[in-house]
Image 1 (cartoon, rainbow, N blue to C red):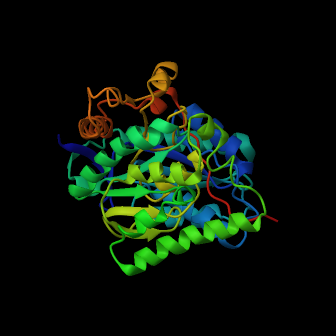
Image 2 (image 1 turned 90 degrees about the vertical axis):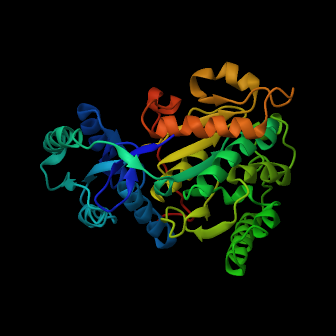
Length: 385
Protein backbone atom coordinates (compact mmCIF):
# COMPACT_ATOMS: atom_id res chain seq x y z
CA UNK A 1 0.00 0.00 0.00
CA UNK A 2 1.27 3.44 -0.92
CA UNK A 3 1.58 6.36 1.47
CA UNK A 4 -0.08 9.67 0.64
CA UNK A 5 0.80 12.87 2.47
CA UNK A 6 0.79 16.65 2.37
CA UNK A 7 4.06 18.17 1.04
CA UNK A 8 5.54 21.03 3.08
CA UNK A 9 7.81 23.84 1.93
CA UNK A 10 10.85 22.41 3.76
CA UNK A 11 10.56 18.99 2.10
CA UNK A 12 8.85 17.18 4.98
CA UNK A 13 5.54 15.36 4.65
CA UNK A 14 2.46 15.72 6.84
CA UNK A 15 -0.21 13.06 7.20
CA UNK A 16 -2.63 15.47 8.83
CA UNK A 17 -3.29 19.06 7.78
CA UNK A 18 -3.79 20.85 11.09
CA UNK A 19 -3.99 24.56 11.68
CA UNK A 20 -2.50 24.98 15.15
CA UNK A 21 -3.13 27.64 17.76
CA UNK A 22 -0.02 27.67 19.97
CA UNK A 23 -0.17 29.62 23.26
CA UNK A 24 3.26 30.51 24.61
CA UNK A 25 2.16 30.51 28.26
CA UNK A 26 -0.70 29.41 30.52
CA UNK A 27 -1.86 33.05 30.81
CA UNK A 28 -2.72 32.97 27.08
CA UNK A 29 -4.16 29.44 27.03
CA UNK A 30 -7.81 30.33 27.61
CA UNK A 31 -7.75 33.09 25.01
CA UNK A 32 -6.11 30.73 22.52
CA UNK A 33 -8.60 27.99 23.35
CA UNK A 34 -11.61 30.23 22.70
CA UNK A 35 -10.34 31.31 19.28
CA UNK A 36 -9.44 27.71 18.35
CA UNK A 37 -12.90 26.49 19.33
CA UNK A 38 -14.61 29.31 17.43
CA UNK A 39 -12.62 28.52 14.28
CA UNK A 40 -12.73 24.73 14.71
CA UNK A 41 -8.94 24.19 14.63
CA UNK A 42 -6.36 22.47 16.84
CA UNK A 43 -4.75 23.89 19.99
CA UNK A 44 -1.75 22.94 22.12
CA UNK A 45 -3.10 23.33 25.67
CA UNK A 46 0.04 24.88 27.16
CA UNK A 47 -0.31 25.24 30.94
CA UNK A 48 3.32 26.28 31.43
CA UNK A 49 5.60 28.64 29.51
CA UNK A 50 6.82 31.12 32.13
CA UNK A 51 9.37 31.06 34.97
CA UNK A 52 11.37 28.24 33.39
CA UNK A 53 15.10 28.29 34.10
CA UNK A 54 18.15 26.37 32.91
CA UNK A 55 17.41 23.06 31.23
CA UNK A 56 13.65 23.49 31.72
CA UNK A 57 13.70 26.67 29.64
CA UNK A 58 15.57 24.88 26.84
CA UNK A 59 13.09 21.99 26.93
CA UNK A 60 10.02 24.26 26.91
CA UNK A 61 11.35 26.35 24.03
CA UNK A 62 12.46 23.30 22.02
CA UNK A 63 9.11 21.58 22.56
CA UNK A 64 6.98 24.54 21.48
CA UNK A 65 9.16 25.10 18.42
CA UNK A 66 9.04 21.40 17.53
CA UNK A 67 5.26 21.18 17.84
CA UNK A 68 4.91 24.14 15.50
CA UNK A 69 7.37 22.63 13.01
CA UNK A 70 5.79 19.15 13.01
CA UNK A 71 4.89 18.22 9.40
CA UNK A 72 1.29 17.45 10.42
CA UNK A 73 0.85 21.20 11.01
CA UNK A 74 0.11 23.36 7.97
CA UNK A 75 -0.02 26.77 9.69
CA UNK A 76 0.58 28.15 13.20
CA UNK A 77 -0.96 31.04 15.08
CA UNK A 78 1.21 31.86 18.09
CA UNK A 79 -0.77 33.47 20.92
CA UNK A 80 1.33 35.24 23.57
CA UNK A 81 0.48 37.25 26.65
CA UNK A 82 3.41 39.58 26.02
CA UNK A 83 5.59 39.48 29.12
CA UNK A 84 6.54 35.78 29.34
CA UNK A 85 10.10 34.49 28.97
CA UNK A 86 9.35 32.50 25.81
CA UNK A 87 8.60 35.39 23.48
CA UNK A 88 5.85 35.01 20.92
CA UNK A 89 7.73 36.77 18.13
CA UNK A 90 10.88 34.73 18.72
CA UNK A 91 8.86 31.49 18.71
CA UNK A 92 7.01 32.46 15.54
CA UNK A 93 10.25 33.36 13.74
CA UNK A 94 11.78 29.98 14.58
CA UNK A 95 8.70 28.05 13.43
CA UNK A 96 8.56 30.09 10.20
CA UNK A 97 11.92 28.56 9.23
CA UNK A 98 9.91 25.46 8.27
CA UNK A 99 8.29 27.49 5.49
CA UNK A 100 4.70 27.28 6.76
CA UNK A 101 2.47 30.32 7.41
CA UNK A 102 3.00 31.68 10.95
CA UNK A 103 1.50 34.72 12.64
CA UNK A 104 1.68 35.98 16.21
CA UNK A 105 -0.74 37.84 18.46
CA UNK A 106 0.02 39.26 21.92
CA UNK A 107 -2.89 39.89 24.28
CA UNK A 108 -1.19 42.87 25.96
CA UNK A 109 -0.51 44.55 22.61
CA UNK A 110 -3.57 43.52 20.63
CA UNK A 111 -6.27 45.10 22.76
CA UNK A 112 -6.98 42.46 25.38
CA UNK A 113 -8.73 39.13 25.06
CA UNK A 114 -11.82 40.16 23.06
CA UNK A 115 -9.84 41.99 20.39
CA UNK A 116 -7.18 39.25 20.25
CA UNK A 117 -9.81 36.55 19.83
CA UNK A 118 -11.50 38.45 17.00
CA UNK A 119 -8.18 38.99 15.20
CA UNK A 120 -7.19 35.38 15.73
CA UNK A 121 -10.44 33.94 14.39
CA UNK A 122 -10.12 36.10 11.27
CA UNK A 123 -6.61 34.77 10.64
CA UNK A 124 -7.66 31.16 11.23
CA UNK A 125 -10.70 31.39 8.95
CA UNK A 126 -8.52 32.81 6.18
CA UNK A 127 -6.04 29.97 6.55
CA UNK A 128 -8.76 27.33 6.53
CA UNK A 129 -9.81 28.20 3.00
CA UNK A 130 -6.19 28.32 1.82
CA UNK A 131 -5.14 25.03 3.41
CA UNK A 132 -8.05 23.14 1.90
CA UNK A 133 -6.24 23.50 -1.42
CA UNK A 134 -3.26 21.42 -0.23
CA UNK A 135 -3.69 17.92 -1.71
CA UNK A 136 -2.12 14.61 -0.76
CA UNK A 137 0.57 13.17 -3.03
CA UNK A 138 2.27 9.73 -3.11
CA UNK A 139 5.29 9.65 -0.78
CA UNK A 140 7.87 7.13 0.38
CA UNK A 141 8.24 5.51 3.79
CA UNK A 142 11.47 7.48 4.31
CA UNK A 143 9.23 10.47 5.09
CA UNK A 144 7.65 8.77 8.12
CA UNK A 145 8.69 9.26 11.73
CA UNK A 146 6.78 6.79 13.91
CA UNK A 147 6.63 7.13 17.68
CA UNK A 148 6.09 4.00 19.81
CA UNK A 149 4.72 4.23 23.35
CA UNK A 150 3.12 2.08 26.06
CA UNK A 151 0.94 3.13 28.98
CA UNK A 152 -1.18 1.36 31.55
CA UNK A 153 0.82 -1.81 30.91
CA UNK A 154 -0.08 -5.26 32.17
CA UNK A 155 1.20 -8.82 31.72
CA UNK A 156 -0.03 -9.01 28.13
CA UNK A 157 1.66 -5.75 27.10
CA UNK A 158 5.18 -7.14 27.19
CA UNK A 159 4.42 -10.52 25.64
CA UNK A 160 1.76 -9.59 23.08
CA UNK A 161 1.00 -5.93 22.34
CA UNK A 162 4.55 -4.53 22.47
CA UNK A 163 6.07 -7.29 20.28
CA UNK A 164 3.26 -6.70 17.75
CA UNK A 165 4.19 -3.00 17.61
CA UNK A 166 7.83 -4.07 17.31
CA UNK A 167 7.02 -5.98 14.11
CA UNK A 168 5.41 -2.88 12.62
CA UNK A 169 8.34 -0.73 13.79
CA UNK A 170 10.90 -3.00 12.16
CA UNK A 171 8.90 -2.91 8.92
CA UNK A 172 8.99 0.90 8.93
CA UNK A 173 12.76 0.86 9.46
CA UNK A 174 13.30 -1.75 6.74
CA UNK A 175 11.47 0.52 4.28
CA UNK A 176 13.63 3.55 5.08
CA UNK A 177 11.52 5.18 7.79
CA UNK A 178 12.40 6.24 11.33
CA UNK A 179 11.07 4.93 14.65
CA UNK A 180 11.28 6.88 17.90
CA UNK A 181 11.50 4.93 21.17
CA UNK A 182 11.16 6.92 24.40
CA UNK A 183 10.44 6.24 28.09
CA UNK A 184 13.97 5.95 29.46
CA UNK A 185 12.63 5.15 32.94
CA UNK A 186 11.26 1.96 31.36
CA UNK A 187 14.71 0.91 30.14
CA UNK A 188 15.96 0.41 33.71
CA UNK A 189 16.96 -3.22 34.20
CA UNK A 190 16.84 -3.92 30.47
CA UNK A 191 19.32 -1.33 29.23
CA UNK A 192 21.91 -4.03 28.49
CA UNK A 193 19.59 -5.36 25.76
CA UNK A 194 19.51 -1.95 24.10
CA UNK A 195 23.26 -1.40 24.51
CA UNK A 196 23.90 -4.57 22.49
CA UNK A 197 21.87 -3.10 19.63
CA UNK A 198 23.71 0.23 19.52
CA UNK A 199 25.15 1.02 16.09
CA UNK A 200 28.46 2.08 17.65
CA UNK A 201 30.28 2.49 20.98
CA UNK A 202 29.31 6.16 21.36
CA UNK A 203 25.59 5.31 21.18
CA UNK A 204 26.10 2.43 23.61
CA UNK A 205 27.78 4.83 26.04
CA UNK A 206 24.96 7.36 25.66
CA UNK A 207 22.33 4.72 26.46
CA UNK A 208 24.15 3.55 29.58
CA UNK A 209 24.79 7.10 30.75
CA UNK A 210 21.20 8.15 30.19
CA UNK A 211 19.80 5.26 32.26
CA UNK A 212 22.41 5.73 35.01
CA UNK A 213 21.52 9.42 35.33
CA UNK A 214 17.86 8.60 35.81
CA UNK A 215 18.71 6.03 38.47
CA UNK A 216 21.00 8.48 40.30
CA UNK A 217 18.34 11.17 40.25
CA UNK A 218 15.68 8.85 41.67
CA UNK A 219 18.03 7.54 44.35
CA UNK A 220 18.89 11.11 45.37
CA UNK A 221 15.25 11.66 46.35
CA UNK A 222 15.53 8.92 48.97
CA UNK A 223 12.20 7.35 48.01
CA UNK A 224 11.11 3.94 46.77
CA UNK A 225 10.41 4.00 43.04
CA UNK A 226 8.02 1.05 43.35
CA UNK A 227 4.46 2.24 42.93
CA UNK A 228 5.61 4.45 40.10
CA UNK A 229 7.79 1.99 38.17
CA UNK A 230 5.95 -0.32 37.99
CA UNK A 231 2.87 1.73 38.84
CA UNK A 232 0.12 0.47 41.11
CA UNK A 233 -1.96 -0.27 38.02
CA UNK A 234 0.95 -2.19 36.46
CA UNK A 235 1.24 -4.28 39.62
CA UNK A 236 -2.48 -5.01 39.64
CA UNK A 237 -2.12 -6.01 35.99
CA UNK A 238 0.47 -8.65 36.91
CA UNK A 239 3.84 -6.88 36.58
CA UNK A 240 6.05 -7.44 39.62
CA UNK A 241 9.33 -5.58 39.09
CA UNK A 242 10.74 -2.70 37.11
CA UNK A 243 13.01 -5.17 35.27
CA UNK A 244 10.00 -7.21 34.16
CA UNK A 245 8.21 -4.09 32.97
CA UNK A 246 11.28 -2.80 31.11
CA UNK A 247 11.96 -6.09 29.35
CA UNK A 248 8.43 -5.95 27.99
CA UNK A 249 8.47 -2.24 27.22
CA UNK A 250 11.54 -2.28 24.96
CA UNK A 251 9.89 -4.85 22.65
CA UNK A 252 7.84 -2.08 21.02
CA UNK A 253 11.04 -0.75 19.45
CA UNK A 254 11.48 -3.96 17.47
CA UNK A 255 14.89 -5.48 16.81
CA UNK A 256 16.55 -2.89 14.57
CA UNK A 257 19.95 -1.36 15.44
CA UNK A 258 19.84 1.90 17.39
CA UNK A 259 21.19 4.68 15.18
CA UNK A 260 20.99 7.73 17.43
CA UNK A 261 20.13 9.08 20.88
CA UNK A 262 18.40 12.48 20.92
CA UNK A 263 17.19 14.98 23.49
CA UNK A 264 13.53 15.28 24.45
CA UNK A 265 11.74 17.07 21.61
CA UNK A 266 14.83 17.11 19.35
CA UNK A 267 14.51 16.21 15.67
CA UNK A 268 16.45 13.06 14.68
CA UNK A 269 19.31 13.51 12.24
CA UNK A 270 19.43 9.84 11.22
CA UNK A 271 16.92 7.31 9.93
CA UNK A 272 16.23 3.97 11.58
CA UNK A 273 15.55 3.29 15.25
CA UNK A 274 16.22 6.34 17.45
CA UNK A 275 15.99 6.71 21.25
CA UNK A 276 14.54 9.92 22.70
CA UNK A 277 15.57 10.94 26.22
CA UNK A 278 12.71 11.65 28.61
CA UNK A 279 10.36 10.09 31.17
CA UNK A 280 7.50 7.66 30.66
CA UNK A 281 4.43 9.74 31.53
CA UNK A 282 2.00 9.17 28.68
CA UNK A 283 1.14 12.72 27.63
CA UNK A 284 4.65 14.05 28.31
CA UNK A 285 6.21 11.34 26.13
CA UNK A 286 3.63 11.78 23.35
CA UNK A 287 4.31 15.52 23.30
CA UNK A 288 8.07 14.99 23.16
CA UNK A 289 7.77 12.60 20.22
CA UNK A 290 5.53 14.94 18.24
CA UNK A 291 7.89 17.83 19.01
CA UNK A 292 10.64 15.62 17.54
CA UNK A 293 8.56 15.32 14.38
CA UNK A 294 6.56 12.10 14.84
CA UNK A 295 3.50 12.13 12.57
CA UNK A 296 1.84 9.13 14.25
CA UNK A 297 2.21 7.18 17.51
CA UNK A 298 1.50 3.48 18.09
CA UNK A 299 0.47 3.24 21.74
CA UNK A 300 -0.01 -0.07 23.53
CA UNK A 301 -2.09 -0.34 26.68
CA UNK A 302 -3.01 -3.31 28.82
CA UNK A 303 -5.24 -1.58 31.35
CA UNK A 304 -6.53 1.02 28.87
CA UNK A 305 -6.14 4.78 28.41
CA UNK A 306 -7.96 7.31 26.21
CA UNK A 307 -5.20 9.95 25.77
CA UNK A 308 -4.45 11.45 22.40
CA UNK A 309 -2.25 14.18 20.95
CA UNK A 310 -2.69 17.72 19.75
CA UNK A 311 -1.54 17.00 16.20
CA UNK A 312 -0.72 13.29 15.70
CA UNK A 313 -2.95 10.20 15.59
CA UNK A 314 -2.33 8.09 18.71
CA UNK A 315 -3.28 4.55 17.71
CA UNK A 316 -4.27 2.36 20.68
CA UNK A 317 -3.33 -1.31 20.70
CA UNK A 318 -4.16 -3.83 23.42
CA UNK A 319 -3.27 -7.48 23.84
CA UNK A 320 -5.71 -7.83 26.73
CA UNK A 321 -9.14 -9.09 25.55
CA UNK A 322 -10.96 -7.75 28.64
CA UNK A 323 -9.63 -4.24 27.95
CA UNK A 324 -10.73 -4.54 24.34
CA UNK A 325 -14.26 -5.23 25.56
CA UNK A 326 -14.40 -2.71 28.42
CA UNK A 327 -12.71 0.12 26.51
CA UNK A 328 -13.63 -0.79 22.96
CA UNK A 329 -14.44 2.82 22.03
CA UNK A 330 -10.82 3.76 22.79
CA UNK A 331 -9.08 0.79 21.13
CA UNK A 332 -8.01 0.81 17.47
CA UNK A 333 -6.51 -2.68 17.34
CA UNK A 334 -7.22 -5.58 19.69
CA UNK A 335 -4.71 -8.42 19.37
CA UNK A 336 -6.68 -11.65 19.74
CA UNK A 337 -5.79 -15.30 19.27
CA UNK A 338 -2.12 -15.26 20.31
CA UNK A 339 -2.40 -17.36 23.45
CA UNK A 340 -4.64 -20.03 21.89
CA UNK A 341 -2.46 -20.24 18.78
CA UNK A 342 -5.05 -18.94 16.32
CA UNK A 343 -2.95 -15.90 15.53
CA UNK A 344 0.76 -15.00 15.56
CA UNK A 345 2.77 -11.96 16.60
CA UNK A 346 4.09 -11.65 13.05
CA UNK A 347 0.64 -11.73 11.43
CA UNK A 348 -0.77 -9.27 13.95
CA UNK A 349 2.21 -6.96 13.34
CA UNK A 350 1.47 -6.98 9.60
CA UNK A 351 -2.20 -6.21 10.26
CA UNK A 352 -1.26 -3.34 12.56
CA UNK A 353 1.17 -1.96 9.96
CA UNK A 354 -1.60 -1.96 7.32
CA UNK A 355 -4.01 -0.29 9.75
CA UNK A 356 -1.38 2.37 10.43
CA UNK A 357 -1.11 3.09 6.70
CA UNK A 358 -4.89 3.47 6.45
CA UNK A 359 -4.82 6.01 9.28
CA UNK A 360 -1.80 7.86 7.87
CA UNK A 361 -3.48 8.11 4.47
CA UNK A 362 -6.55 9.70 6.02
CA UNK A 363 -8.83 6.79 5.10
CA UNK A 364 -9.91 6.68 8.75
CA UNK A 365 -9.32 8.47 12.04
CA UNK A 366 -7.99 6.70 15.10
CA UNK A 367 -10.28 6.53 18.15
CA UNK A 368 -8.48 9.32 20.01
CA UNK A 369 -8.96 11.63 17.03
CA UNK A 370 -12.64 10.74 16.64
CA UNK A 371 -13.22 11.40 20.35
CA UNK A 372 -11.32 14.69 20.25
CA UNK A 373 -8.57 13.82 22.76
CA UNK A 374 -5.75 16.34 22.37
CA UNK A 375 -3.65 16.27 25.56
CA UNK A 376 -0.43 18.31 25.67
CA UNK A 377 2.25 18.52 28.36
CA UNK A 378 6.03 18.66 28.33
CA UNK A 379 8.94 17.45 30.40
CA UNK A 380 10.22 19.48 33.35
CA UNK A 381 13.35 18.62 35.32
CA UNK A 382 13.59 21.19 38.11
CA UNK A 383 11.63 23.42 40.45
CA UNK A 384 10.62 26.67 38.78
CA UNK A 385 11.14 30.01 40.59
